[in-house]
Structure formats: structure tokens, C-alpha cells
Image: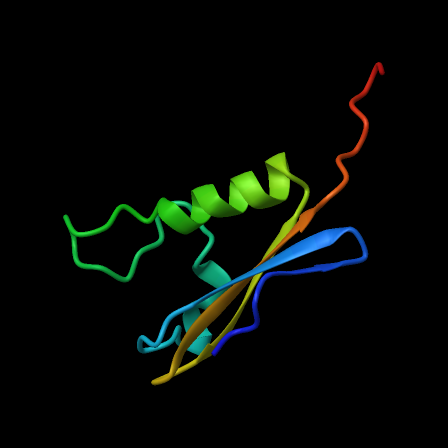
Length: 90
């Protein structure tokens, strides 16, 4: 069972896990690339993880990482700051 969401040093951590086939080591570096998909044509657009990365990292200044074990599943770890950075000109 994955860890429950937690708060540490003004960061919230969210764990999302599955028990699927895992992500092969040789493609992990590409999974956040726009239009990258392992699905057959017409079954996936390759936008989901790219959009997630953009929202989490660029918009909210957080991080997204993963732990994956082939044949056992994957856990994505999302870390979001609990305190926002001041906007410029404020």
C-alpha cells in the first residue's frame, strides 16, 4: 500500500499508484514528452503526462517523479508547495 498524502517542510506529497506492468527503464526519460505514447495509433494521444507535468512543474512550481518496477506497477509522486511564491510587481 502506498504512503498516504503527507505534509513536510511546506510541501504536500501525493502518491498515485497502480499495479500494472510498470514502465520499462528505457522509455522512462520520454514519458513526459508531448505526444509520446506506447499505445497503438488511435488509442492514445500522448498528452496526459505532458500536460500533468506542465501544470505541476511550470504552473505550480512543484515536482513529479516516479518509482516503477516492471511487472509490479508504478507510483507517481507529486510534490506541491503549500506556500506560493509572490507574484512579480507585488
